Length: 287
Image 1 (tube, rainbow, N blue to C red):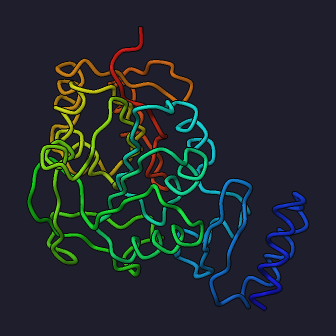
Image 2: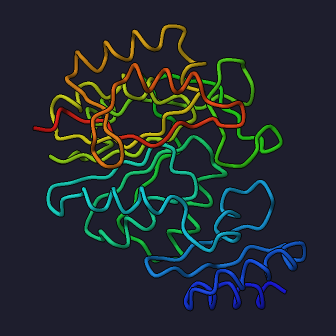
């Protein structure tokens, strides 16, 4: 069944037979138990059929995760003197295709979950990638330890693992990007592109990026989720102050400037079944 499923999935990708495949998937998804390899034009991914595995989304939809944002990031990256930092890399949904298209780009990945990094390593080897380096490390405001929970039974999928202040899970190491640069664990470049998806811990990571933001050309692609409000009692005031002090602006995917107060209001008004407002871009004011 695995070989047949994999063959039909990849034929469907190549010939764009998604409607026909949709019927096939509905009928045969219950029989697929093993991982398969999906071959997209940019790269290949190992995908797992288990219901809560994030990579299962690719099996169901026959496309890479968040293709729109991947293309946006690739479009922004300059070929020379640049680095891409993937904070909350999971199985490499962003880093793998970016590394294949920008094969001379230095890419650094961070994730505190060994489970996620094993999947990333699998995809690095599958694609014979040489320009990705990864660390089993969380990113925050400063060096320390925090509780991290990656028990899949506690989440809707494996993309939701999170740092928490409830002593759930196990202790993991965290550090700031500023400190990692000082310790030469990151060989920084003039142009720094950062993707940040760490389930509400983004503001802590931003606070640990102040020196980098002010000394280099930094563009941050981040997810604005409801969880960020849960981690900060006075988020709106602190966040707007942080933006002003560091001369940062928020833009949508079309690089239209956004009012942070409006975004936070929209975040507070999200429907109960929605956790994420959207993806946004953070950088110094565009002239």
